[in-house]
Image (cartoon, rainbow, N blue to C red; front, side, top):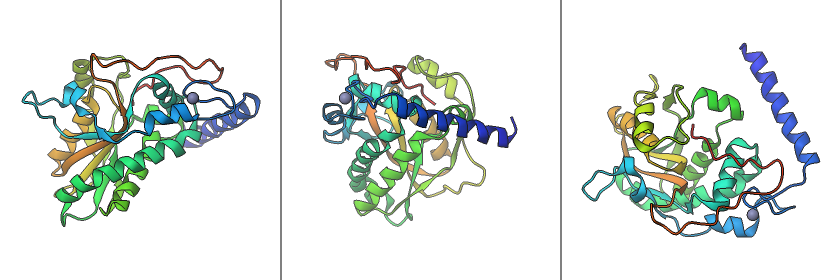
Length: 268
Ligand SMILES: [Zn+2]
């Protein structure tokens, strides 16, 4: 499709969202509560301490008690937060940029001590969002994880670690990863994440950012590509991670208001 047609389509989609906002009453993207975009009980899902979330991710497990890299985040990907992330990514709920960016900022702040220690005099830390496919970007009209990466960079800076956003990674298309198990995801991703030709990564320190940690296959693929290009990747930040197997579940009640996406966030 020529680029002007793509641009027109993006504008039409955006206008449709604005009109929908006038017609459909605002509802909490997490629980459906009317007249609040992201209510206090749902916001509490991201208000806890930023802690390591990588121990439940099979593809990050090095099988000797260690993981490929620590992944920090404030949330458990279940219940209202799961619905909120899906609505934010695929339901046009860009009004959640603000609370999600605030959580990512706290994550950046929590990443600062460990990252600063590694960075030393290697120059500003590069904060890199896990890339989505061009297809997913077109569908969404943007790359939501970029919002988180910007906030993580600011959080690192506020924690005393100079950091800038960078986009050295690209990702080619392939099957949608939602619903695939750890091994299938790894297979689907192999060779699809690549470092752009112009990227200069040797000796640089990179912090990866994604919205949700599930199996860790995506982070592992990005980590591999960055390390192969000479970067060091001491840690990653996410909004939330799926609860470890056997953990007490959070009530998974779907929002009851029309216009709120009930689809799980499709990775990509
Ligand atoms: Zn709510």
